[in-house]
Image (cartoon, rainbow, N blue to C red; front, side, top):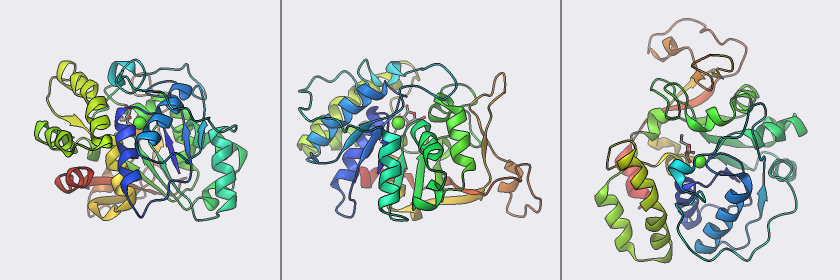
Length: 308
Ligand code: BDR
Ligand code: CA
């Protein structure tokens, strides 16, 4: 199951998963973040049409964060969240349930059998936890793209966008006891698509590749004009690849939290970084939560190749 805020890199992640024979996408929930939760749902229906997955149910999720105003990111992902790429809207209907309710129902129906890939702010997952406190024992595994562990943030100097869009929700989820893998900027920032990668994608000539290259144009413009570099980062696609093949990354087990009160640091992923030392022999400062797996290094060339 995928929880997402498409979002150009979210769309790429889902196009990738839709090509993998070992993956069964059972449902998708959308969340505010790159765009509104409703627009994200319309976008995901378009992506599923392109991916020839017309039967996957799509439920609209949280329209706003738990405890702060809504912020969206059209400056990165375009006015519609998909780079403003014109194309026919899907004629499919949205599911008549919320994304949080959809998640709780599927987790109860398939105890231990569901892998949840979270590619946006964690509001839906937090709401699902409030509906079903046993959720961490019902969901098999959670992989979430989010946080900046030992590198600067991307939306503030300290915070990564997905955590910053709803810090309270993220902190609730990271404390809940899920079997959880976090894919932070520390690893996603090394998965950068350059011109040669883009051209290879364009040359594939399939419907999916045409759609992917079209929406990537806006993403590339943002990276060139705002960040001043020709390569762009494939955050969510990396999380999708690692969901299927965790061995492509190194992971460390760390208790983590999200800074909720810092004047400058709200939304920052917090861990006791002294624990990263090989010979660390101390309890660390976060002693009241179970550790989660945090990806700390990745084989970027193989990931880029898989995505192609
Ligand atoms: C995350 O924020 C969004 O802009 C991307 O889709 C990704 O999920 C990266 O910080
Ligand atoms: Ca995303």
